[in-house]
Each structure stands twice: as C-alpha cells, then as structure tokens.
Length: 509
Image 1 (cartoon, helix red, strand yellow):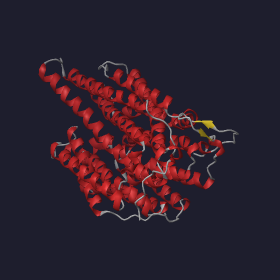
Image 2 (image 1 turned 120 degrees about the vertical axis):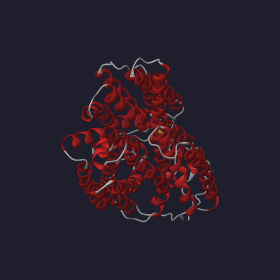
Image 3 (image 1 turned 180 degrees about the horizontal axis):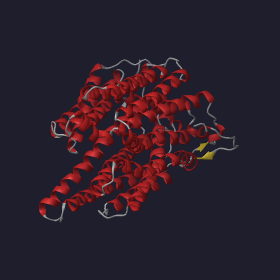
Image 4 (image 1 turned 30 degrees about the vertical axis):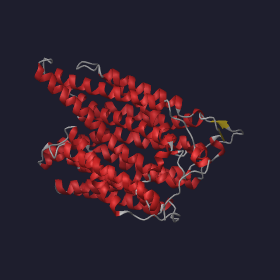
C-alpha cells in the first residue's frame, strides 16, 4: 500500500487542467506516519464496504435455514441501507466534535460487535439487529477516510491517494458476491462473518495504535431537530425507492417517498437557518463550490449505473443463463479486479492531466457499454457478457477517482467532513434509486411483454425486461457525459470565493 504515496523530487511546477501552476506531486511527500494512518483507514473501510454486499448471495440459503420468506429476508439489506442513510449525515458533526482516533474506534467497534453478533445469531431478529449495528460502524468509515485524506495529503498528491480510495469504493462491492459464493460453497453462512471478524479486529487494533488523538479545533453543537429529521428524510427516501424496485411488500413506495421528500425539505431549511445562527448537521455551503456540485451530480449518475448493473447482471446470469452463485461471482470478479488495478494509475494520470480527459473517456465508455447491454439475448456468449462488464468497470474506474478528487479539492478545511458526509449520503440514495429504477423497469416490462403476447415464453419476457432496464440506464448515463465536460480541478486556493475573501463565516462554535 506504500507505493502510491512515494515519489522522487522534480524541479518545476506544471499547469493543471484549469490553468493554474501546481508543484509536481513528488515535491510534496507524505510522511510515513500519515501513510500508515491512511493505510489503516483504507484497510478498515475496505472491510466494512465489502461486508455491505457479501450477504446478497446468501439470501436464498438464509430463507431456507431460518424459515423466512423473501420479503422478510430482504430486510437484512433494506435495514442496512436505512441505517446507513440515517447515520451518515451525522458524521460531519462527529468528525468535528471528536478526534479522528475516537471516531475510528467507535466505528470499527460497532462494526466488529455487529459482526460477532451476526455470526452467533440464533435467529432472524438477532441477525437483523446485528446488521443494524454493523451499518452504524460502516456509515462512519468512508467519510472518515475521505476527510482524513483531505487533511493529511497535499493537493498535488490527492489524485494518487484518491485512486487508492476508489479501490475501496468500487472493488469491495464488486468482489463481495465472489467471496461469499466461495464461502457458501464449502461452509455455513455464519462463516461469512467469522471470516470478516478477525480482519476487522486486526484493523481496529492497528488503526487505534497509528491514528493520532489530538483534539479538533472546532466544537460544534449537535442540533437534535436535525438528527430527528434525518430519520424520515433519508430513511424514507431510501425505503421508498427500495419498495419502488419491488424489494418487499411493505408500505409501498408512495407514502415513504412523500414523507421523505417533505422531511428532506424541512431538513434543508433547518440547515440553511443553522448556517447563519448555529451548527448545521450538514453544512450545505459545500454546494457553493461549483465543482463540488458538478462532481456530486456526476457521482450520483455513476452510482445509479453501478448499483443497477450489480443487481441486474447476477439476475440475468442466474435466472436466464442458469449459472450458480459461485460461477456468477467468479464471472463478475475480473471487472472488480480491473477497477482495483487501474485506480492508482488513474490517480496518477489525474495529477498530470486533470479530470477532463479521464471523465469524458470514462463516461463515454460507460454509456456505450450500457447501450450494448440493451441488446443482450438469452444466447449471448458468456465471454461477451464478461467483456462488457470489464468495459463498464474500466469506464467507472476512469470516472470515480477524478470525480471524487475534483469534487472535494475546492472545499476549505472546515467543509471537509461535511462534503464527505454529503457525498456518502447521496451515494446511498443513488444506489437505492438505481436499484429501484432499473429493477422496477425490468419487472414491469417483463410483465407487459408476457401479458401482451409480445414474448413467446418466460425467458423472452425476462429478456424484454432486461433490455428495457439497460436502455434506461444508458439514457441516464448520457447525462454523465454532459456533466463530465464541465468538471475541472480547482483546489481551494483557486476557488473564487476564497481568493476574494467572500467565503462565508464558519458558523461553528
């Protein structure tokens, strides 16, 4: 993990894509202590995000062994997403109120305790509680990692380090099904947690030793009303979107979405008021920086495509092509490896050429692959499906690192934790939206093809649904190309409101 953080001195500054001169990355070495801190955070975050998707393949076995139906078992995923969407908005406060070391110990402590509880769970209720406890720790880790990178890494080196962070964000969810498929092939579902637990404990011990304990300068107050509003606002949106995708037979999408939108509006109004007179739970002044706004929108579109395909492809491979869970996981593994191996190189390219050529290439490739997926057939060669998935992974690798780095670079230090929390919250909502949108389109079009007689059999009806869903994803992805054309790398020192002294007051006490 040390190689992305090293380099030899070079003599002269070079221009960024925005035209400003920046000292070469290797003139800004990262100290050994900071490298160890980032390594500890990357390892811990990889483990907790891997856990988020590791259970997807195990749901059928859990239904059989715990004697529960599909809508019930789906709550293991839905409750995890709900908890994440509610806890993440509070991380901006936590990261300013507590030390980095304290937040890390709390997060990994919750995650480890939830993992142990899940491994020992005697039945479904305890397993569901364990997933909620796990999610409380998982929600904090990604904002903690991104905030630490912004605080510890010089601007000229952030592209390289964000490339490593992109491995966590993109590869961990991709290889989760592969790992769980291997475990379930030979062991009980409990070993999914027993395998993760020692790694999580080792990361906890290593991180607790390496992370500093110096107090943060700002001591914001926690606004109880904002915390209460996050539950129906973000929780309602995520739950409503999951119901729209047909992932359960609960309240349906209408009521949760309506409640979520109303409470979200109240939450935003509350934060705007607190920015003038108190301590906002999420400081929305991050959106005053245009590149943060563009990058956020770009990442939302990318996450919709990623999560939608992660859901649709396994369904196609198992229900249409007849592959088992292990074969499905292994077929999707090369794409995850491509993202992981390429991410550090994308970070280096970003530091040299800026985001524009990378994001334009990535979004164009992602859009083209999704259009090709729209022509899938029941007899499409498996090697062609594999090639398309690798191509999609390549496009996403070119997108994620530049978008994250360009979005967070313009923020001043007091907005680091809030910007990271906003991005992480919107990723959860975008993942739920992508899953809901594409699965909903697939189901409705398959049913329409079956009832209208347009399809000659069940497989043809399913394929009509898959093609429609991928076509919708491709049209959504076109928006990413437009957004990518506006993305530039503008560090905080270049931001016009900072340079002119018009940056709003912090408003934190």
